[in-house]
Length: 114
Image 1 (cartoon, rainbow, N blue to C red):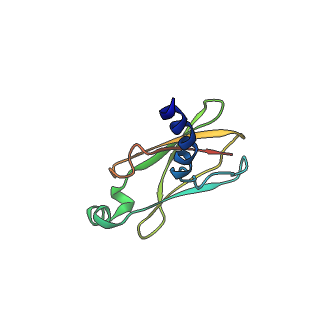
Image 2 (image 1 turned 135 degrees about the horizontal axis):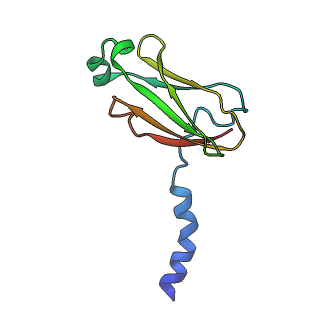
Image 3 (image 1 turned 90 degrees about the vertical axis):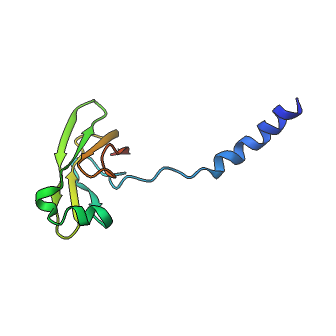
């Protein structure tokens, strides 16, 4: 009984110690308004891709609340900036998944609310 009581009393403190997930740059974007996901090419990845316009491949697949999927390619925005621009077409929770030839970006997943 004593152990269960201690676990019950400590449980709320364990929740406070966890950090919240990072917010998506598209969070709270109104429907039909653009948002941008910016990927910064730096460090060893930048050295491996001196001409990102040609060598970096990146796309983000967005899935709407009604399960429609939009695959958006990224574009090079100068320097080491790779950008995906997207406008959600309906309100609600959107999921996304990144596909890239840069290992640190590939298979990233997240969600946001429009």
